[in-house]
Image (cartoon, rainbow, N blue to C red; front, side):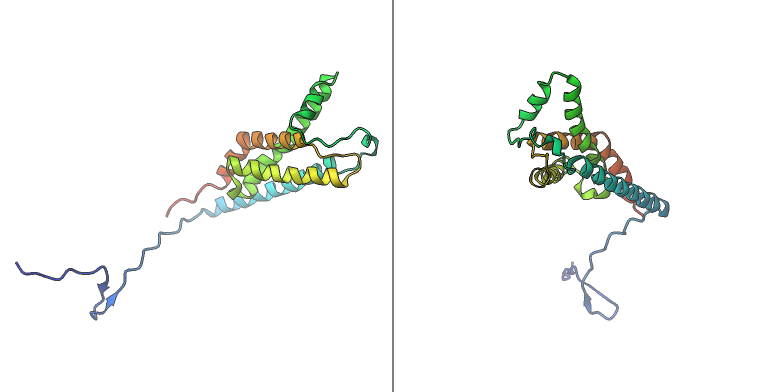
Length: 183
């Protein structure tokens, strides 16, 4: 049996010169043109709703309330405002305050993962929402007459975003941004 030198991974072309193997690039998945249009329209609608949500959020939280100047106080203790809401004689007022703050966060949890799919994920949504709501509360407490910073509002808004994300945001985002089919 004759001994033959082993061939290296480098091949040779017809002229006998060595050439290096190139890593084969995987075929890029192709998207159906209709799915691209649907995805674009969904993102456009989500963006429009996010702008509308930002306007509503600004109107609800950043408009001055001169009549409330003597009633407002900064709350840095989680749960303090919730306890005060629940101690009110009218349960309707507590439901309005707590439910309103939760509902204010829901659109964020639904729309953000559609507009920015890389933010999809429970922890990312929670962190992003908490940061945005902290900024709103800081602005509210520092700049708006009759408004104050309340950590419970941040907690309730973030909880609302979590609910929105778990109920709808995650599913809608996956449907809009599903991976392309391989060719």
